[in-house]
Length: 547
View 1 (cartoon, one colour):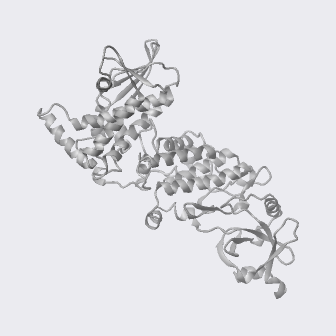
View 2 (view 1 turned 90 degrees about the vertical axis):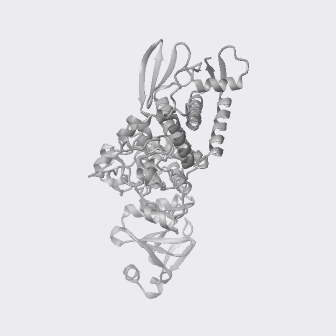
View 3 (view 1 turned 120 degrees about the horizontal axis):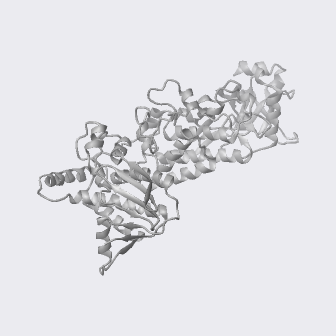
């Protein structure tokens, strides 16, 4: 530190022992800082950062990095203050005793670089073992809040990267290196980080163009992806030789909807991905595969929704799923047979198909209809107009369950409620994608079913049956709650349920009993979930049950 500062202050000892900054725009209130009191805290390509006090820090530029543009930009930033918690905006210009430009004064940032904590899986696991998805959610929202404030003031960060964000805890975030930010259409951001650079500006000199919010949106999505999949770049995958080409070509390796094949990196990444909510996966896939980028406000809403999703108990809150290797390729509930390979399981196994085996028809009005035809391990959804099938979609639920590693995050001691919710989530994710692509809300007036399970419920709730019966969504929810509570109270864990189910199924196979009561209860509950979700999506309040 002494050698660096001696080169700057080669003046009389009395005067070179301090440097100065002004507390007001009119430059009447001058503050002096004693050089010997400074502590070097960081070095970079442009200069060095010194701690002044518990609240203040200095950035002193190397002489060869000082330009008229840098000075003009910093004076503009000082004159146009943005006061926001965690934003280390230049507070005042720093001068020597002759008022030569040195750098600027800013808020002291505390903590460590985001990339040295969240982007390091082993450090995150070992030193921050108490952190869960909840902490990552809060951290992400803090980051997005600061970015949102900058965007409101027509400022883009430009060089979004994990080195320029410091975290003291998941709720205490600091943005540094703010002098590089793009200020409206006045001052460009002349630097960037390749992996956070949008495909369309890859390879272009950053100093030759102004960035847009669309460019920034790509970097924001990349940052969020690497927070929720700690440190993993979105375009890194198995067999990848050049990640930069993958960015340009948008070769996103994580599966969504019809993209069954996954090239996700080995390790926990595919399991972390599968454990994200439907909206989170859809949003990342939309950005990195379809090039449909989201605004900061949209990301804030999506992550707040994800927070509620985690609070609901629909997923594990562990950042890194606890994988039971014995059941990695043998989902506990959906498949009762030993699984030798994915292909064998998807062809031979029939249990998942039984989930919706009896849901034969969902019909809307005379002209428009949706027919759902169940087979052993697949679901065929057909859209009908004026009696003619205009489109059909085949959903192979067995393959979905295995590809998505339906129960990979559970073990035999996992609670029944948690295990079953994982299965319903994976199935509904695929159905919802189909709904969004094919079903226009508001054009259906009637919902008709011939499902035997719903007939049984209808008879239970309507003693005088003469003709067709209507069930409302409240009744569906009530029956769903009863099935959920019975499973949870009768069976202590997934292992307990699985063992008893297998014993029953062996008796069924030996014709000792006609059917497995446990299996029927499980599939009844999951079937009710499908009906409930369908009704909520379309806004239809009642089902007409054909008796």
